[in-house]
Structure formats: structure tokens, C-alpha cells
Image (tube, rainbow, N blue to C red; front, side, top):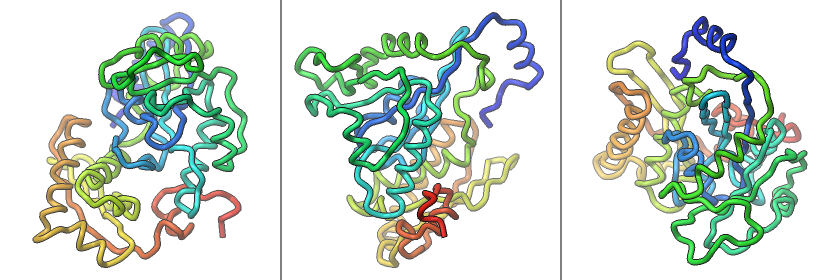
Length: 308
């Protein structure tokens, strides 16, 4: 869905242009540091889901910004925290993988939370042992909420809401990525398929409509995706851990589930520019967050020491 440039046209572009720069830049930090919101601002596309609830990002979300001779591949990684069960350990393994392939790293910290702790201390707390890229910058987010000038320990202070500091941060990113060919056609905005974002947007809508604790017990999986159908048909299963949670997701007379579906459908249609028929089902999958085999089925990576 995102490969909008033809292969022949892309190859002709690459061979006709001069030297290019291309690199991967990972956004890292604690949960709720503003990584997803900043990713959306950097690529000027509402790709990543955003929520006031922590740990909403479970898998890496990739956004691509191509301008002139430079292609920046941004990766929104899960937050850094101390894991206590299998899903959280899977999320941290995603973080470790993204760090390993990065050319540069942006360490995000909300400006309202005071001085950022050393990134190395967060990695130690999270149990992550990984080589950090040579190019790193500390970025204070939510500048629109700041009541003082940029602290000395920060390289940038930005606001994804107002755009403050975004241009300066992008100039730094362009300057640190290496000289190499583009990895993706210039028109691409992500490497991930529509079905990935469809499940994410359903989960985002659920975060907005459900009670405080329930979203962490909820997963979304695409059961059917009919390419070429008009409207595009997508069936998604929402998994909860207990029968009582199923009733919460459905709501009285199914009203909560319909509201979730309406909001998610609008987000998907905004992304792909066509009509969608979104068919949601709620199913019970006991203790899915703690079972590696079930997590693997849902598409989460399993750390090697937990593989059966």
C-alpha cells in the first residue's frame, strides 16, 4: 500500500540523481516521553498511535521522510522501563533490536519532568545491553508546556504540537546520516503494511474509550484483509484476558465497540484515502500477555531465553 512509486521509476530516479544520504534514527526514552507524537511530526503523517496511557507502543513504528538528496527513516520504539511479564520483555527486545540497527538516536524526555537521567541508566534498569550509535542527541519534548529556557543538558527542545524546534532537529538528523543510496522509494511514508496500522488504530481507539487498566489487557489482530474489495474489508479480533473484560469492550448493547470501530475506521480511511468496512469481534484469550507462544502468534518477538 505504501509502495506508490513504480520500481522502474524509482530505479531511474536513483541512477539519475547525485550522491544521496540515508539513515535510520531511533526515538528512545521512557514511556510517555512523546516519541509517537514526535514521529508523526517529523514525517508529517499521523502514523503512530498516541495516548496519555503509558506503554501504548508495543512494536516499532517506522516513518520515512525523504527530501531532496536525504532519506530519514525514523523508528518509534517502545518505552524503557523495568519489565515484569512476557509482553513487556518482548517490548524491550524490540527496543534492543532497533538500537542495534540505528545510525543515530534521539533520547526524548518531557521538558516538564526536569533534568533527563542518563540514557545508560535507563538501559541498565531495563536490562538492555546494546551498542549505542555514535550520533546521539537529547531532545526535550512538549516545549509548549515549558516555563523556562532550554536546560544545559539538552541538545534540542521541541514541541510536536506547535512545531517549535522541529526544523532544527531535522537539520541535525540530515547532517548525521551517512552517504548511501535511498533504501526506499521517495514517496514511501512507512515500510509497514496497512493491516499493521489498522490493528494499531483499533487499539488506539480502544485506549480512548475503555477504562484505565483494560487497554493493557487488550490486543488487536487482523483476521481478514480483502485487498481490492470496495469498500476495503478488514476484520479485526480484539483479544481480552477474561470474560468480564469482553463485556466492558462490548458495552451496553454493543455501543462501546461501535464507538471504537467508528473512530478506528476514520483513522484508517484518513491513512489510505478510501472507504473501509471495519468488522470488529471481541474474543477471550486467557493470560495472553504472559504466554510466549500466544505472543508469538500475535506477532510479538520472543526473547531467545523465553523460547520453548
